[in-house]
Image 1 (cartoon, helix red, strand yellow):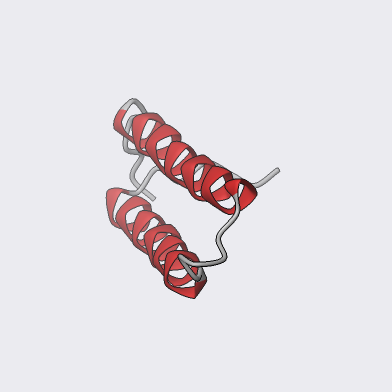
Image 2 (cartoon, rainbow, N blue to C red):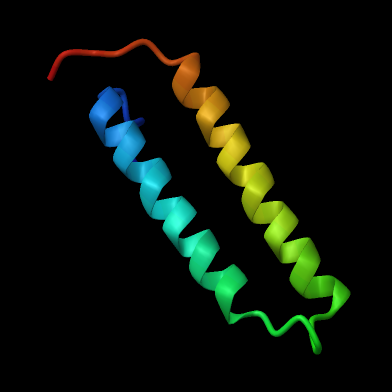
Length: 64
């Protein structure tokens, strides 16, 4: 397991990268052929992002 990200700039960068991945997945889904599993995967990604944001908000920043 990697070390927790405590630097706020790194946290924002991490969240931006994860959001970009989410947007790429969302863009790749064809609304005409999307299945429940596809929507469930998107919901899971959003839930994971929200959980990570909560973790970052509750994590004290440590000077490096």
